[in-house]
Amino acid sequence: MDLVKISPNAKPPVCKIMDYGKFKYEQSRKEKESKKKQKTVTLKEIRLRPSIEDNDLNTKAKQAIKFLSKGDKVKVELRFRGRELGHKDAGLVVVNKFIDIVKEVGTPINRPKFEGNRLVVTLDPNKK
Image (cartoon, rainbow, N blue to C red):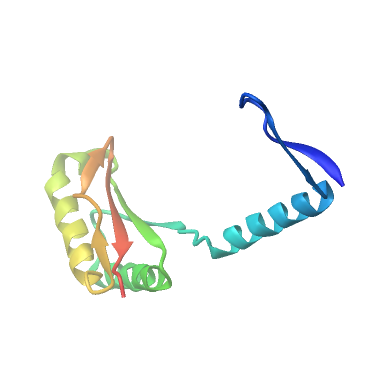
């Protein structure tokens, strides 16, 4: 048995007689149990281009649907290069079309926004 300070800053300090090794073991078991119950959400990324064809867009959308159905978040990134930056509205149309395709399994967290030469939107899986 050991004498363990429970709260050393209290006046007077609170102590307890216990088996310290057993106490540390039980504490580590509780920590492991709480970690098992945690759900980690991963962020998957899908890259698009403004000049993407419908068939390629549908392929990327199927991939996003697969990620969303597993419970992962999906970050859709549309990159502009060179003269494409002058036609940002065309990129917005592509992203909105993509969102319409995957709306059954995912909803956008925020509106599509421009970050430099990229148009970014994050999709969250729908609750079941």
